[in-house]
Image 1 (cartoon, rainbow, N blue to C red):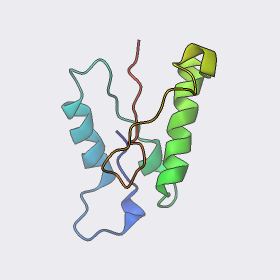
Image 2 (image 1 turned 45 degrees about the horizontal axis):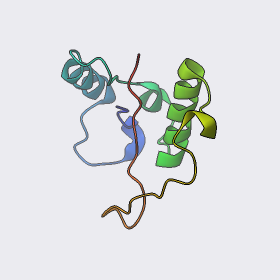
Image 3 (image 1 turned 30 degrees about the vertical axis):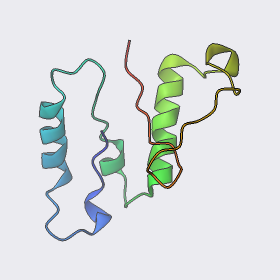
Image 4 (image 1 turned 90 degrees about the horizontal axis):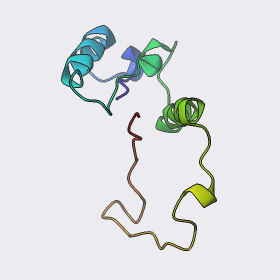
Length: 95
């Protein structure tokens, strides 16, 4: 989970320190979901792409890069979703 920066600009947005604390309480018993405060600690609001790249780097740093030989490979057809044909964002469990 990545609480957005306080400068996101949404009226009534609870301060990021409170949102981080609430998110940490929400995932306290999870062994595969965690809270990353990086986004909220930046100097300004960030686009989702920038945040996703940060998360990808975090996963790669912890687990290493995944190659096609370690997955089901490219021949597996992707299932279309109701998200305008795009795949939903995937979170990786910690081991």
